[in-house]
Structures are given as structure tokens and as C-alpha cells.
Length: 331
Image (cartoon, rainbow, N blue to C red; front, side):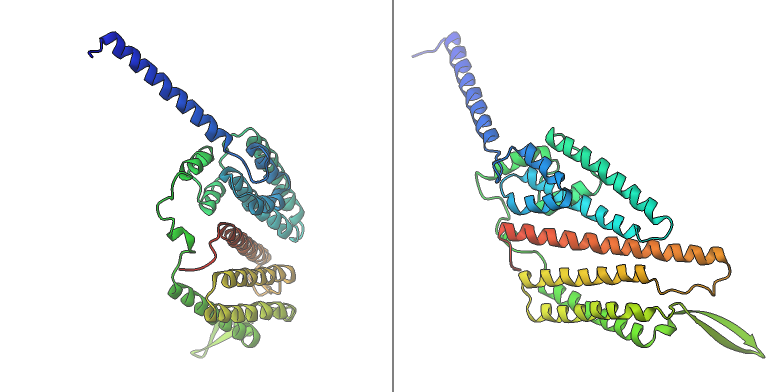
């Protein structure tokens, strides 16, 4: 039977309306499926990730398994507020200007705390330089968190490509063995150097008399170094023993906690060095040079401590995320 143009147009309109209705229906189902493990609305759960700063961030990283968006906010809360807390704590130890610097960090943390909670509750995107991109990498989220749940819903219809590879922690055994071996060697060198040859860590000045040059050595460390050595030795022995264990038993759930513990010992050693500060720059030319060197060394040590602290947090977050995903072994 022939169909007139008018009938064909009517069929087309009916089919178009049916497709649009199904799309709206599927969209509603997708929206309703964007639930959270806690049963809270995603925007409320995201706000709570920031409410208790890094503490609630860790809590929601552990509890939340459904919403990628909430996991993103939890990870970002940890990566922002934990380093700021460590930085403020360390800066507070600096004489004279330490209180002002620590207060500045606290004000920055307060502004970010309020801003991030408001933005999260309104479900608005707010990019924190470096931290937001790192948070997405850690939870393997899309480029913008507004598309996270959509990607999650789309991925639920079938297994994503590379799913098998995603069941294992990346990295080669050879690389891990080399890294652990280098760490053992470096720790042994530092152990011998600071315990037996610390006086050679010095400034040297040459004096020539009758054609003969004599070198005068002025050690950089003073007697307070002995107050720091027990802390340093504990950290170095922990590094040596821990890396030996990871070489013998190359297991992810053993290696990662040991690496975190080694970094914590290193952080304690650096913080103790800042607190004791067993340096002697009195042989420098003038007072300005002495003060500038002391400030430079303190700033450098603080940056090292902050770097180690951030590294510990990132490694700990990765460990928690991998355990939650069932990724607990190397290939």
C-alpha cells in the first residue's frame, strides 16, 4: 500500500516524539541513579568532604564507592588542607616571623574552606591549580567533574577498555628493586657520613704561605648535631630495613605501608633538624650573610618537609583508593 507524503510525515513525527520521550525517560533514570554510598545527595556529601577538612576527606574516600564526584571532592579536601595544616605547623616554629607566616597560611585555608564548601553545595566547578588535576588523576576521573557521573553511568553498561590492566598496580619489579637498592645505598652513605665524617661537611679556605697552600676547615655543624643524630639514625635504619623487606617480599600491600612509614620517619627527621638547627655559619663574612644563609637553609628544609608530607599523603590516598577498588597486587 502506498503511503502519501502527509502520512509519511505523520509517522516521522510520531517516531521522533517517541524517541525524544525515551531519551527523556532514560535521562531521568540516569539522574536518579547518581546516588551515593551514604545515601546523601551528591552536593551535600561533597560539602561534608570539606566540612571537617582533610579528616572528613579521608572518611568519605573510605565510605564513598558510587559517586566519582564525591570521591573527587574528598581527595581534593585531603590534598589541600593536609599540606596547609603541616605547613602552618612547621612555619609556626620559625622565630620572630613564624607566627605571621603561620597566620597567613591559616587565613588562606579559611578562605579556601568556605569557598570550596559553597561551590560544592551549589554543584559549581572551581579549579584549584594543580590540586584539582592531581585529584582527578588519583581517582581516574574525567577532565571536569561535571561529567564524572555521566561517564560513570555510561561505563556501567559494559566493561571499559583496559579493565584487565586496571586490576593491577602499574610498574615493573625491576624498577622497584632498583629503587629500593638505591635507597639502601643512599641511607648507608648518610649513616656513615653523619656519624663518622660530619666534620668534613664544612667550608674550606685556602691559605698560601711560601708556595704551600694549607686548607682551613670550618665545620658547618655545631655540637647540637649530637642531639639530632639519634633521630637521623632511626630514620636511616628504618629506611634500610624497610627496603630490604620490600626486596625480599615484593607485595603491594606490604611495600606501600612500609614506604609510607619510611617517609614518615624521614619527615620526623627533617622537622627535628629544623627544630634543633645544629648549624654554625659564624665563619661567614658578615652578619647579613649569616642571617641570609640561616633563613635560606630553614626555608629549604621547610620545603623539603612539606614535599615529603605531601608525598606521604598522596601515597596513602593511592593505597586507600586501590584497596577500595580491589587493586591490591602487582602484575
